[in-house]
Image 1 (cartoon, rainbow, N blue to C red):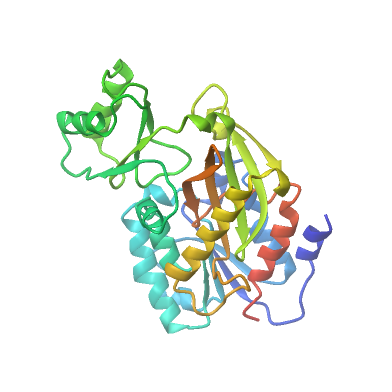
Image 2 (cartoon, rainbow, N blue to C red):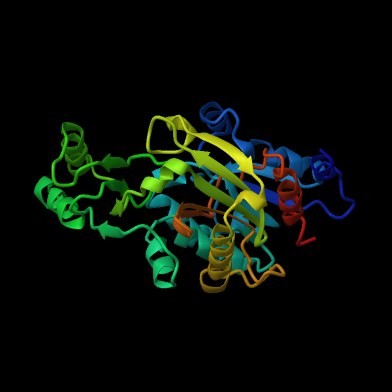
Length: 339
């Protein structure tokens, strides 16, 4: 409670102009996610002393000149950006990067280079090449698929191990399908493959070996300014997916209950992104990472942490968790760091 109250204190320094980018109208976000933890951030930052605006990035009036007038811009309200796989990256490159060139003091977080890298799951290949363990994966060009070619790709990828087929640009496990037996498609498998070929997907397709150990839960490690603040364990129930939309449960676990390998690897991933991906030369934390926020999701395969994904665009940071108040306080501070 004390940390949240400190977020409400008004500063005497000049009021920074803060922009929360959004994809949907606020009312739609609230309707879709009634307990959306990022919902209260604009009001908290406003009460702390900032001039806060919430604007849709698809607004044609929001050009580079308009954005350059702000002091801070964040993507933390930008859920459902993946529904616009061409327009969203175009906005980042056409508006945000030029705005920062016009106003070098403009603080955009996370930085545009990280956003562009993270909005397509091809980033997993770079992390795998850097030595981080991911599930066995193959990316498939979705531009000229036929039923026969996709079915063949699935069967060639795995003899007996179940596989996940999903789009490279997506969120919350949307648009993905579990194929239990790659050599003997079920009616549901055939229908899903046919739908992908007929209707297409956002970006390429990913084939991944299904990790049976997901049944024990997926760890979501939250990082603010490069530091691990708290962890949520998400466990599937009645479905292979652990998201709440599919019946999964989520609870905070203490750091001591998070496997050491998970903590170590997740920290290394955040540092790697800060060093190799981010182009934010303006602000660095004492851990060597310019990332303002990130969530690293993974499962344990024995004693080994297997990375499932990194969320650095608009992740659910579980700020409402018991230990999330400290993260919330530190996150609030970021909006004023240029003042």
